[in-house]
Structure formats: C-alpha cells, structure tokens
Image (tube, rainbow, N blue to C red):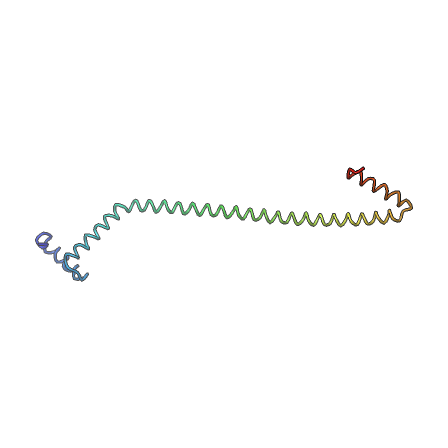
Length: 137
C-alpha cells in the first residue's frame, strides 16, 4: 500500500532507513514525520528564539555593566574610607603632639611660678581666673 502511494524509489529509501534504524517501515516513517515536525517548529520558533536569545544577551550585558559600576563605586567608597582613616590617624597624632606640648608648657610655667617670689599671688590669681572661666565666680 505504501509502495503504491509513494513510488518504488521512495519505498526503497524507506526500507533502507528502517533497516538502518532497526525498526519497521511504519516506525521509520513516524520517525521521519517527527523529525519533520521538529524542523517545522524550529522554523516557526527559530526567529523568536533568536530574538529572545538576543534580548537575554542584552540583559546579561547590562547586568555586567551594572556590576562593573557597582564595583567601581565600592572601590571609591573604600578609598574614601581609607582616606578618612588616614585623616583620623593624623588628627589623633596632631592631638597627641598638642597635648604633649601643652603639658610641657604647663610644666615649664609651673616651674617658673613655683620659683618666683610671687608664687602665692600668681597661684591665687590663676585660681580666680579659672573660677571665672568656669562660671563659679
């Protein structure tokens, strides 16, 4: 019946295909039809899949650009934080130097006051000025 409808040449091809696949002629014909259906689906959906693939590629590239920008911002923030830490260290070092200088000046002035014949007057005057500065006087 198949021979009469498709011709002797095509029937021989179908028979050879069935032998190669190790199936019946009917199964070989079904396999051919399934393959044809898949090719038709690829032809119909191929352009859509290509467009979708291009869209997804664009999204991935955009995400990569965003990630690069975020990494750059993080690097900038880290540099700013490092600079801030350096500035804070410099401020603390300057404060330590100033505190040491103030202590040396205080010690020198105390030595001058204590060796002065007017030490009692200077001490009383200093205490009065401190009370005024504190708002106690």
